[in-house]
Structures are given as structure tokens and as C-alpha cells.
Image 1 (tube, rainbow, N blue to C red):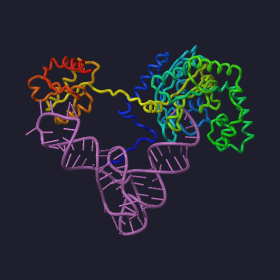
Image 2 (image 1 turned 180 degrees about the vertical axis):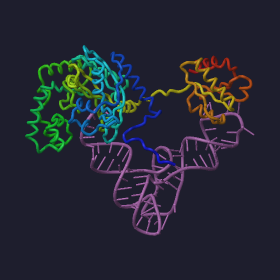
Image 3 (image 1 turned 90 degrees about the vertical axis):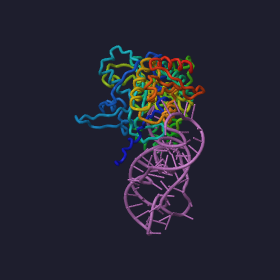
Amino acid sequence: MSRNIPPVTGMKDVLSADIGLWQHVERSWRAVADAYGYEEIRVPVVEHTELFKRAIGEYTDVVEKEMYTFTDQGGDSLTLRPEATAGIVRACISNGLLRGARLKLWCQGPMFRHEKPQKGRFRQFNQIDLEAIGFAGPDVDIEIIALTARLWKQLGLTRVKLQINSLGTPESRKAYRALLQDYFRRHLDALDDDGKRRLEGNPLRILDSKHPPTQEIVKNAPVLTEHLDAESTAHFAELRAGLDALGIPYTVNPRLVRGLDYYSRTVFEWITDALGSQDAVCSGGRYDGLIAQMGGEATPAIGFAMGVERVVELVRLAGMTAPANLPDVFVMAQGDAAQRGALALAEKLRDELPGHGIVVHCGSAKFKTQFRRADESGARVALVIGEDELARGVVALKPLKGAENTQSEYPVAEIGARVAEFLRRST
RNA sequence: GUGGCCGUAGCUCAGCUGGUAGAGCCCCGGGUUGUGAUCUCGGCUGUCGUGGGUUCGAGUCCCAUCGGCCACCCCA
């Protein structure tokens, strides 16, 4: 006996007991994306390491310590994508989609980050990602937030709240960043090691520090939204007016800064109090400078990412039980010839009753056992073929799980019509 | 990467101050040799996470290690 090979840390199997919930979320998502005219694309899970370094930023935790990076047989440094936007932008550039771009896209799939797993945080996790490329906003900014709000409504989620902020343009942020550095330098003693390190690399990140002494200092720090350029201020005002007009509640959180460097102007985050300390369910923002920075034609864009595992968990907590996908007919047989007959009968029924689930009991077992399994399958009717029925060219039909307990026999040729009639009657 | 808690049957767990493993569920079989969802009787299943140590003796105590969960951190 050989030793079991364990699953990789932080990587989860989604078993059939849970798949209904996932499919419910995915179906709802597709319906909402369709309703807004967004189209699906699919991009590789692996990209050149350089792509993420340039897009996400060297000083981010994601790039500094969380990437699954390896050298392939050809000597290239490749990385399992830790997020989707970089790859989508790359795909738009690679495929020449940017000229006059007005792209409304979404993408779904696994992302990889080497973090220590905990509730709501995995090393392989799934994101639904949406990008509006070639739109300067703020109208699309409002649209994609409305889209997410509609999804929560569709899924019956109430424990999510919207926070928004504006990071301004790179220029105004640079000025603000200098202001912030000055301020924090005057309070250097209060900063923890992380804060000190970020002071030079990315001082904005100090704003959402959870270190209590740092938080004290942050309280009186210059506020980003008060140091925006005029255009960003107007953009942000319009965003708020738009959300108000649509009746979407939000709070402005001046300390909301994203962990990825490419954001500018609008940033937003849907947070929940239901998932422990991993409270971000969906977050995103505008990245007007990224595409040019990646070598593409300068194109404004905005997008967001949603953690599918977290959404699935919220749906579960909201009491949603996915409708089980139960079969309608359970076919059982005894004896080699009858079992062959059962397979043939099931094929015939699948031809005649499209849209109905027909399960055949595979493997030999006593009828007692087969009936028990038929009940467990959730099927509404059992079809029985024994040596006897086979010899006479008939099939026995017996209703399951119910009052009606009479068994009847029909010629094989009639059975499709009889089953159809029974299913109609017992609905 | 740091910290807290936890690893006993396929699952959920019990096992007192050390005396070489147990329950329920599941599964299988009989009662009912071709008819279920109830009942009843019986049966199977364990390198007690792993390695070392203390001891006459370790699931139990000690050390190490791995894994899980949760938190810090970070984020979806």
C-alpha cells in the first residue's frame, strides 16, 4: 500500500454537494453580464513573470512574496496569474483590440497566490473579473457598480456594503504622496516596521494599516480626497451623483487604497461582515494609466474582481439551497441479458424524452438494493427489467417515493410514452 | 512569514490521574432467494497525522515534524 498524496496546501476540491451553489452563482453572473452587454473572454492562467511585475507593481505584497513563479524548460520565468487584469490587458494588446477600443469584457477562472490559507483565503481561488476598456467614465464607473449591485440582489445577498474612494490622477497622487511622506516622517516613531518600509515604497498603503499606534497617526494625516486634481474631483462628484440617482447606498472611505499599484481615480470595494477577517467580496477601480504603461495605446479603463468562493459562501449563509439536479427515471435490471436491455432501453428513452435524466443502475445487485439506490437517486419512477420481463418483451414501471405504489407492465415499444405520461401526471 | 487551537474508522466524535481502541452514521449481508424509502439481527473498517524519546507498558506524558482551522498580515 502506497502513501496517500495529499492535496496541495490551500487548494480546495469543489465536490458535487457544493456544485449546485457554484452553478447558481455562475448562472446568475452570466445573466447579469448579458443584461449589461458584457462578453466573456478566456485568457491563459500562465503569463511571463514580467507582466505581473510591471502591471501590479514591485512593492506590492502580491509581487513581493505571493507569486507562484517558476522557470520553464525553455528557461523563461513564468508565473501563475495572481489576478486577471494584467492578462486581459496583455491579451487586448497582443490581439490588437485597442484601436478605438470600446470593450466590455468579463473573464472567470482560478488565480494563485502563495499566502497562508484561512477562512475565505486560498492559494488557488476563483475570480470573476470584469473590465470596461476604452471608457473614460464616470458613466461606466456607475454602470459596473450598478451591475454588481444587481448581482447581489439576484443572489439574495444583503450583508454586503459598498465603499468608494478616488485616488486621483497619477500626478495628483504623486503630490499627495509627497505630502503624506512628509507627514509620516514627522511621526516616524509611531510607525511599525511595515509602515517604515512602505514609507519609501508605497506610503498610501500605510493609510489602511491595522497597527493601532499607526492608526492614531493616520487619523490626522492629510486626506486624499482633499488633495485631488480638479478633474478627478469632478469625476468623483459625478460618480456619487450617479450612485445616488440609482439609489445605490455607499460610504466614502478616504482610506480605501488598493493593494495593486495600477489604480487611479475611482476605487470601490464591496465588503461583508459575514466572512470573518477576509471581508472583501468584490473590489476594483479605474486604471487609466496601465495600458499605456504596458506598451499599449493609451486607453482609459475600469474593472473589478470578485472572489467566487466568498460569494458562494455568502449565498450559502443567505440560506440559499441550490435546486438539486435529480434524475426522473431509474432503470434497473438483473441478469446479463437484462442489463444489456436496460442500457438499450435508457438510450431509447433519452431519444424520446429529451431534457429528462435517465439513470441506469450499473453493476449487479439484488432488486432490494437497486430499489434503495433508486430512492436515493431521487428519481420519480423506476423501470424494472428482469429475466421474466425480458422474455416477454415488457418493462415494469413502478412509481417511487409516493402514495402511488402500483406496479404495471408495458411493452417496450410503449414505454417511452407511458413514462412521459406518468411524469406529466406526477409533476 | 508570525501566533493560538486542533489531528483517533469513509464521516461526526468519545477514550478519566499512562494498562496495548469504542459509539453513532455510512457501507455490506440476513430476516423478505424479483421490489425500496420503516423495522430487526449480524458483519466489515483503524500504521490513534508522522518520527523520535521517557516507561515494564504511550492514543494518553515529553521533543521534533507535517497537516488542518482561525487570527495577524494581505486581499477576492
